[in-house]
Amino acid sequence: MDGNGRWAKAHHLPRVAGHRAGAQAVRRTVESAIRHGVGWLTLYAFSSENWRRSPGEVLDLTGLLRAYLRSEVRELRSQGVRLRFIGERSRFDGDIVTHLDEAERETAGNTRLNLTLALSYGARAEIATAARTAARLVAEGALRPEDIDESCFGDLLFTAGMPDPDLIIRTSGEQRLSNFLLWQSAYAELLFLDVLWPDFGPEHFAGALAEFAHRERRFGARPGD
Ligand code: FPP
Image (cartoon, rainbow, N blue to C red; front, side, top):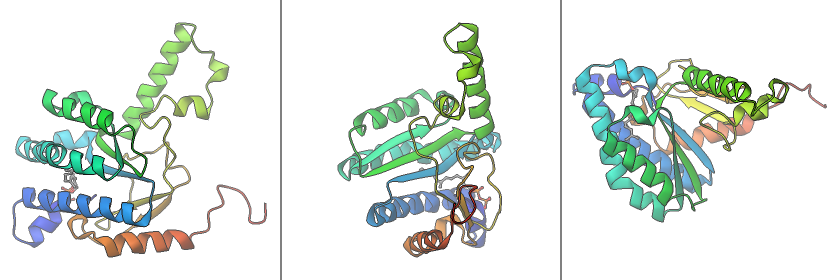
């Protein structure tokens, strides 16, 4: 979800206004996903690197997250949305951690849309943590090195039990993954859109699905295999 800052600048507004407009785009996108029957949606809302922004901006972003959790979870729950959070949640203030834990617990029985927010998330840290866990399990005798395969390693990631993404959309014209789901995106289709995140609407969501439907996915195999 890139481009909040540039959107604010283009509208002669403070950066926080861009993030607020970005939060509205999150609401629209969740509605679009439900309308199109998309089963899994993961939004990169706060990266590990975002902690390095100015204290004021970090406060704005965490404040928006807090407000989103307070105002939205009940509605999402009634719409059949299951919420999950990936990332180092312990870095957030205690009340936010409590909201995150509660939201996961309260929506655990829902199946219509699996909505995951990546918060304080960084893929390299996720992979390093999984490697550390595997090493510890081996040292304790609970895991044999020869049993560490892709499936076993995947179960040590934040995304254990979740399907790999089919399509990754990045807004704002930047063409990189920026430490997002690096392990999980091995065969994902990538789509880079020239729209700033706050302007991302139902037409862009529908367009992305149409583009995805045209992609030929071979997962490394030759055509006809
Ligand atoms: C990138 O724009 C966006 C972020 C760092 C934060 C994303 C946050 C939201 C969409 C709002 C809050 C989310 C929730 C779930 C309530 P940028 O600031 O890097 O934009 P720029 O590259 O144009 O400066």
